[in-house]
Amino acid sequence: MKGITAELAGFAAGVRFAGLPAEVVERVTWHVLDSVGAGIAGSAKPWNAVVRRYALRETGPGACTLYGTAGTGRPEWAALANATAAHGFEIDDYALPALAHPGCVVVPVALAVGEETAARGHAVLAAAAAGFETVVRFGLATTPSLTSDRGFHVTSVHGVFGAAAVACGLRGVDEDTTASAYGLAASQAGGVTEYTRSGGEVKRLHAGLAAMAGIRAATLAADGFTGPRTAVEGPRGLLRAFVAEPRPAALTAGLGERWELHGLALKRYCVCAGIQAPLRAISELRAAGLESADVGESAAGLGAGNVEKPVAGLDARDVEEIVVGLDAATLAHVGAVGAYPRDMTEAQFSARHAVAMHLVLGGNDPGHYELLEQAGFALPEVSALAGRVRLEHDAEAEKSFPRRLLARVRIRLRDGRELRRLAEAPGSPAAPMSGEEIEAKFLGLAEPVIGRRAARYVRDAVLALADDGPVLAVLAPAHERYSRRSA
Image 1 (cartoon, rainbow, N blue to C red):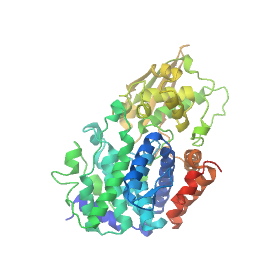
Image 2 (cartoon, rainbow, N blue to C red):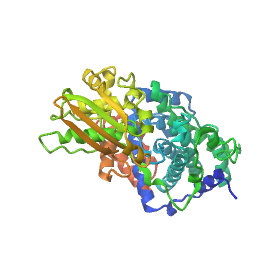
Image 3 (tube, rainbow, N blue to C red):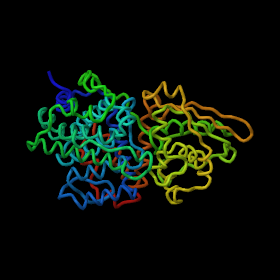
Image 4 (cartoon, rainbow, N blue to C red):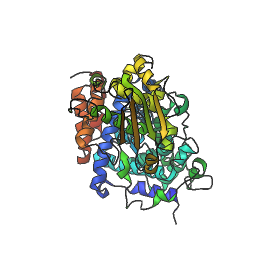
């Protein structure tokens, strides 16, 4: 009887496009587009540029594209830079109830190894589907205990296996070699979540390290280097080392017959997933307070040049207190930083500050955070309101977590009125984005960085993968795209 590691390897080695359900192809294609948009937007941020410069300096000659430059490199190094960029501004995807971040690792690896092997769309989507499924199942088996009990970051623990699955799949290695790659990947899993307490930029790097490690594991295994064949389930394996309350059956139950991608979610705002629902509640309360009913909220306008303006009808100066109710795990994750962040990571993990920013500035998009960064993370009106935001435990949110991310928000005004709203995270499985909204989000992220014409070219090339379009069309020509800033 096969063990868990061997079963996972057999699944990844056997995935073919022809066997994918239509809904899996559609979902993975949208998440590829979303991840590419996140990576393009993230590539423009200075902390991600540090990793890109490092990758370009250290790589050997290679043809793989790095977001944000005409330079190219080997697959490991391209994936390091691109995955860091994709995870580098808190706008990448996640999964419920798995509490995993698959796209930021899986997609950069699929594109880098796809470029290396000159793969076409069907092969890339099949490998990506295997990678998404692998990461999601690791999430189902390990979270929230992985983080809540042990302090590990899901992206860097789960991601190495998803990355190895993708790299092995695109390179066509067999089941036994893939199992060995998983054994090597397990020894490269890691990453702690102390950034949720004291900031720093390392969180962005976790996706890059996982992507790089997964490709490295696949490469070494293909060259004959071996890893333990029970690296996941063994008495000294990953589950025992990383998880206080593992659910090993979730890794293989129905594997290959039942896909677990129905829990994949997209972010509307560039903050931690746990802050998405509170911001939706604030947005709805803000809209309800207007004299005009014409307050539509869409996924467009995410770029720095399209910052939403604060609206009249609910003035931050009229607010006495905002109370945000969350489940216990989310409270621990987004409540520890406090109201006054000192860097971008803290700002994107502070529920108090994000809620205040949304009410004062009108949103939590890249442009809003650029304004905050330019102000040294101290916008007086935002800071003043953030100090009047209180977080508390909410029983209904607790009951729903982690299947759903809910938040209950109460705004107490100085005139004695109180506004209330229970909201669900936008883009989550129970409140999904439409295809039009996903495209609008992509264009809003990509256009400010690479220009209107190039952004539409990339969008069309990604969507053509389902028709077996070439992966090279998604990323090339790099020099032309990244040297053009307007069209």
